[in-house]
Image (tube, rainbow, N blue to C red; front, side):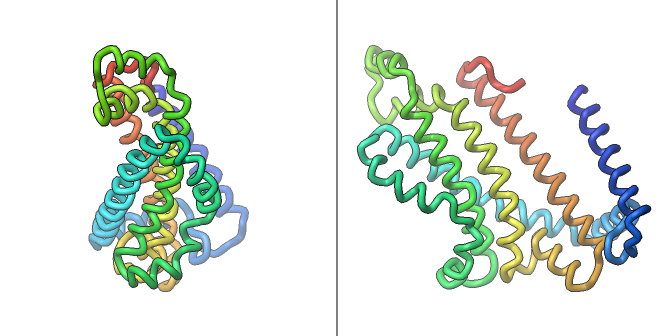
Length: 253
């Protein structure tokens, strides 16, 4: 209930601030829509069926890119964190590639994968990969040796030691990387969908801009923000379920 009150309060303050900008800014609603105009645009998108189609397309692309990235980054992070000598050679490469924005790779992504669905998925993959990889490697390298002694005493061998001992022990640290990757990948989803995609929230933004519909543009922006909030909430819920399954205390409540 406390989180709901905070959410309602934040929404009220945002709407008041937004309305004040519209009232005193002097811009025409065609350039900067009021909350009411954005709401009516939101209703228009729902009635036309456009919003649900674009949301579904974006969520499918996001799920494919994010899940593929997380699975590969987790597997690579567990292995490279365990074999620290190998990571010592690969770490400089990762540190060089990590700061590069996924959008910077767009010309090569289009060259290799063409225009359409693939660029958005690849950009999401790249945006999510390094936060999860680096968080996993760091968590494995900081693992308390007690866990390894327990695994040895119970005769647990590789690869079971990764899934039954190491992963549950380091998951609280990995969760931070997963949350960061989620937000980063969702941000770059829009940029990816602006490259040749014929559906999705990024395409909706481009289409609204080209048609000079600032109300629809603002409705799409708000939809992206609300979906990002829902995705983060879903991540928190899944995280709590894993904590319960593994018997980890101190998880988010």
